[in-house]
Image 1 (tube, rainbow, N blue to C red):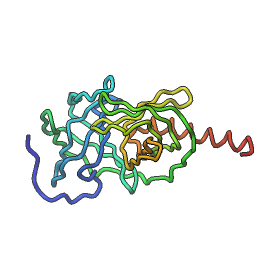
Image 2 (cartoon, rainbow, N blue to C red):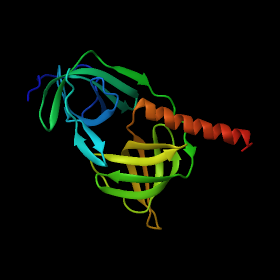
Image 3 (cartoon, rainbow, N blue to C red):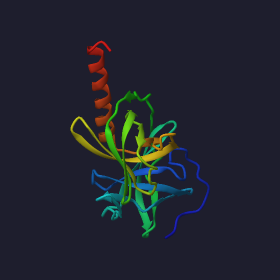
Image 4 (cartoon, rainbow, N blue to C red):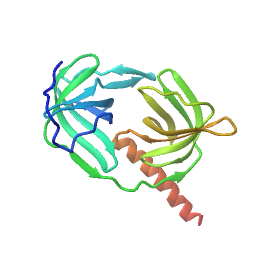
Length: 212
């Protein structure tokens, strides 16, 4: 597997180490990946994986080689169309088809709510409950130390909709009672973000109507 060498000049690509969501061809289901290396013309990412029964399974390359990358950055949500150039079981070499796009981040509205949830990484799982949630992430209390791994996922239900959302842990602390408080951000699709956003706004409208 090869990639062109040289200095990267564009800023519209994800930085090394950035978690990615990958749309493979016309398949609407998103896979998960990680930006590994940037060159003048190419972007090297880890072989995309999908969650199947709680386990990470390597995705097959699309027949046409076309992929779409999505990622979160401090400046907003990025997207980049690319063409698969080469691949092996560990990495894919992608040739970006343009400079990419960056959608300015909006301030996320956070709602305090206690909901049962499960935190998983591979076969390990820890139950707990949310403290607050927004379309970008959540804070939760877990009964034991959360597992970590390549495919970390939060499972919860919002208004009857079951969600399994890829999750990046930003902070984790043990309390005096022995539980663990975890704060992090979601790495989800726009559809899942819309589900969470609607849930938060619905609860806020209901609170206003109750005069709270």
